[in-house]
Image 1 (cartoon, rainbow, N blue to C red):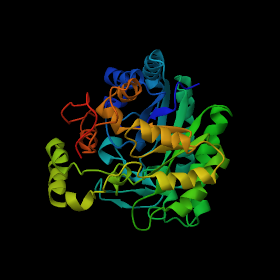
Image 2 (image 1 turned 180 degrees about the horizontal axis):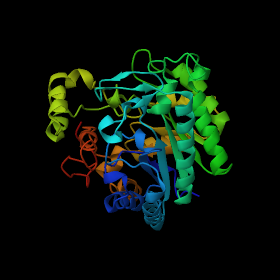
Image 3 (image 1 turned 180 degrees about the vertical axis):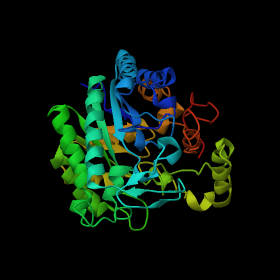
Image 4 (image 1 turned 120 degrees about the horizontal axis):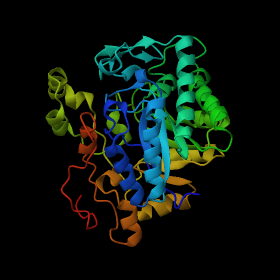
Length: 383
């Protein structure tokens, strides 16, 4: 039983050097748990070594289970539950990290990595499905209270679903039913592994945010299929990490911060010359995915959570009153790990995160952190 219905969303922490659970990662989630959320989500744990974007990203294997148990115990000690987000980067996995050519639903050049993926064979697909199942089994062994399968944001399962990145002509490509096949097989087989009562959340896209990508009409159908395959709950989100990364966040484009932090000369030059084109900016507004999330909620008979532009207690109360089962928040807890607790105590009225997204720029090279001057003792007053 969760103590409330506010969940820390999966936000890449950048604290898993060598692919291991570090004391910094444990402390990060302990602080968020102590800050009042009902459950915190350990983010972007790759199901296999070839699914990583960074060297300081977790990938699931028996060696990290003891560290994961420590993290879960620390979170439980603060009265919160622990969830782990499982995924695979697919065609935008980093060749320099994984030591091989990335895999994807179709052969595709990735400008984000300056690499070309190999089209997955049927054997590759079966192996990756098996990797999701093994990762889920280890997650449960480590004591996690829930698993979130990442089928959005342009990760591998999302790449199969999107018509923009899936050009296959077999049973895993073409029609929407075929493009959904791998994600549904993952959900179905993970459900069989963890059992009927274990909470299995699926994060999905309502829109890829790019021409030729997934749109809401197909996302509604996808939501129904995920529910039928065994999902306990859905979290509608949006965006494609390798193409429209800020579409899922909205707000300011942190190019100056990205340039300062980038150490690789070629990438730094590319950002300087093409950053404004390659990293599009999208205006922020509160609850920016509300209409799309409502459509998903109306289409299924399982719980649906809300994520996207939640700033204050009024937003949370309104979303729950509208029938959303829970609310996920991200940047507000990076800004202030005690955000939920301070709202409950009446110490603040809303988050003073200004959606500068400099915290996003930091994760490429190190730990996620808020770069704004501390002023969270007061409610937000500036625009």
